[in-house]
Length: 417
Image (cartoon, rainbow, N blue to C red; front, side, top):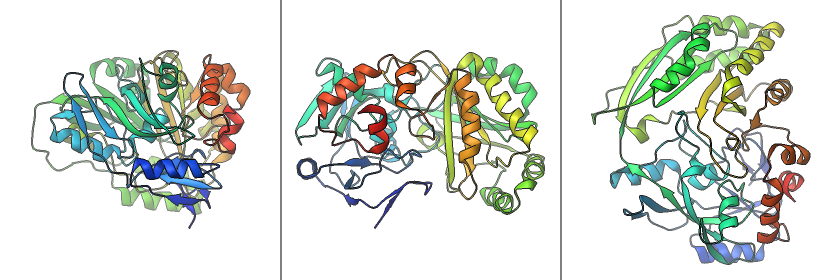
């Protein structure tokens, strides 16, 4: 049976194995010529594609282990973010930040630099304090800042190139509650006030339908413990799906439908445990490209792309998503040159996306952007070398860890062989 990613745009006919122990995993690694690991399949790039073997860690046994003195937890790498955060909550703990969905495996999210939003908060990769890895020979090793330090630094955003993570030590914080507010604002207003709003709120993001003059603003802030009330968000997914299906059949109606949709009242409030408030349900399939821009030019870059879409009356059916992420020091992280604005461009999975993404990518690249590794991009090996000063060292560590390229596939070989 073929393996498919979440959006349906990447598939592979490889065998899919689900080992239940590290010994079973090691045996699979030793016997394989080529191997890739999959989590929830939320990567839009062919990171998990393989002609021979795809390994899922869903069935791996393991339990959470808390080190209170270190404020860390050791967890099975195959756990989903949803499972991890629920287990942490039972211990009175939490991750400091999350993205806006939580089915992904924690290992996959860290391996690709997945992030949430918040000016003082980094990606999930910044929470990693150590890894247990099964190398290309099937041997298990531990790496952290003091042990196998170069391997650890590369593994913090690994793309699955250095081995199979079976256990991760992650930084945790005391459990907390969040209050969410969703409201409609004018784009012109947000352009002027976003930086100030970002300083006022722990988390902030907005969604911007390119053919409308309004944005949907979402803020999250700490609040006292509470029983979560029912959500009061007005926009219904069923209504949005109907609009998308009409746009897929009649693309020229997209600008009109977006303006009509944004005339409705859009507002909402929720309160509750942080791990229940961070994520949203995503059942409508889409394709996605995301670029991390220097924060100072993010709003200007978004305005330029939206202006191009409007001039051409292009059927971009999904909203742009705009978030902020703190700087880090991870070798292959798009955030390693400073704080960024993360701009996500989406297109309904039933509609063409490649040409639209290519034009927008040129604008984002021209403004100094670097792509999210798991989302659509067209970087070449030369681009990687130019954009990432540590790329050569990263590749050297990869060659030492996997000299025969067992964990490479065609996409990754072109960039990192």
